[in-house]
Image (cartoon, rainbow, N blue to C red; front, side):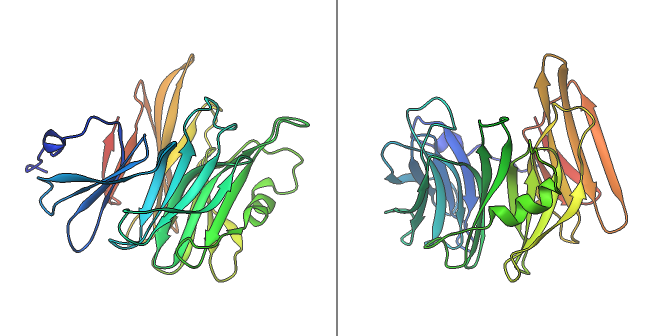
Length: 276
């Protein structure tokens, strides 16, 4: 696009910014930070104000169902290891001015969140150090905009493990479509489709790479239902990016050696924008 503007130049705070959420129809932008602060812009992004700050918390991800109602993943500031920190799910009903913790855990790592109307899905992983150091999927579902949560991890793990004794995968991303179905991307590149009506899962796409170092982190669902996933690796064996897509009748995968992608935007099945 030819009319990009740098809006952080007008940003008056010195802070590591995280996810930005565009609020419709007002055009305001909400931005979370690594030190638990929430910022809100004016409709033209020319003015910014700090809305709130949650103490001892680093915001990991957030989903706003409306301009007032939002749910955020917060991580305890302090422990260096993700598996030692406390993770919290915080809910706001006043645009982020105040937050209420509705779930907390030190047993699981919470990574990504998606919300649509009352349905909210949170995904992550559980690290089992005994007996063999496995990892498993962790999935929470809320049907009331984050006020209460159901653990539906066993339903996904049953499909993902397929009877195998070991599992070395976890949930890395989630998307919800307008029909109440949700897609969960695993770090190995498998995409599972779930439904809030049946709470069951099935494998919708499999993008697993022959190179074990490849990790998938981003998931997109196009307007016609095609599934897109991206990721890659930065290892002693080199750096590479992976982009994969699957529709009802095709499955394609692309690799870009010596590149690493932080995100992709799927404009259409013929046009994607990659950043890295």
